[in-house]
Image (cartoon, rainbow, N blue to C red; front, top):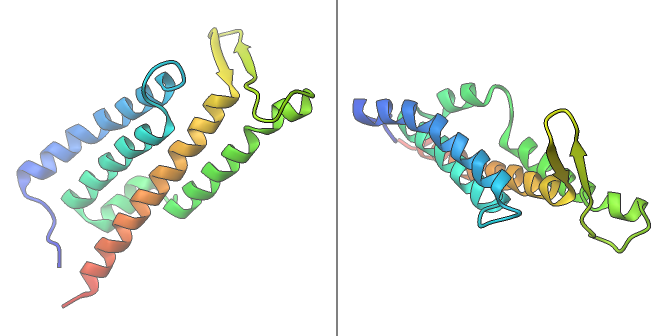
Length: 143
């Protein structure tokens, strides 16, 4: 059975998790112009939850996720990936042509590649966290 982490790991996990999650959002938003994107950002976010999982255990990590099952993240991610292809189809342009919209209040440019990247981010995050949680729960059940 995996014992929860030491005091050093517990303290490090509390400080590093928010930093890793902020860095993953940075990678996600930066990804369509420079290196980064949904996949690597999802891996960084999954690393944050895995560190917390190793430090505090499965039940504490489920509390942090607040009733969001990792399988739900996978489903929402796949749905966003599918939705991202529809705007070009409705505009009569070739399939998977990028569409851009400016949000006037904050001067933020939203796009179909960003929607797709968010979908990849959620799918990768849900997959990795789900796998690690399943492995930790199996290990907990063994004598």
